[in-house]
Image (cartoon, rainbow, N blue to C red; front, side):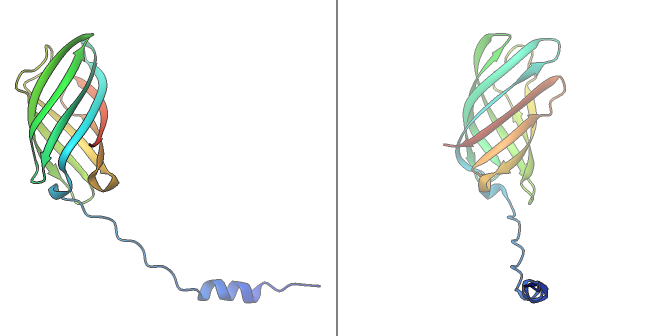
Length: 141
């Protein structure tokens, strides 16, 4: 018994296609509330670095309140800082973060590029400050 596949092919092409789901457009409003974060890497010419901390984003492109414990070459220090954020509609962005009390070997202002995940509830970032190579992530608390 020979089965003809022509009717099946016609039926598949006749099925309505689901409309493409529009990509979410992000804005500063998607980054608000408390987040925990961590990173690790190296300060070129100084040694390894790792940190974890907490920050609060106001939903207007600002992180007015942040604190981290950072270890440079195994020496821990607590730092406070703030940041201003720019966020593109595709979920990528940049942060400029002046440090109130930078660790030895760190400049007074750090910069980062990031990408938002999970509708802004999480993010991944890379340091863009010359001489500091860090990679990290964070999520809402």
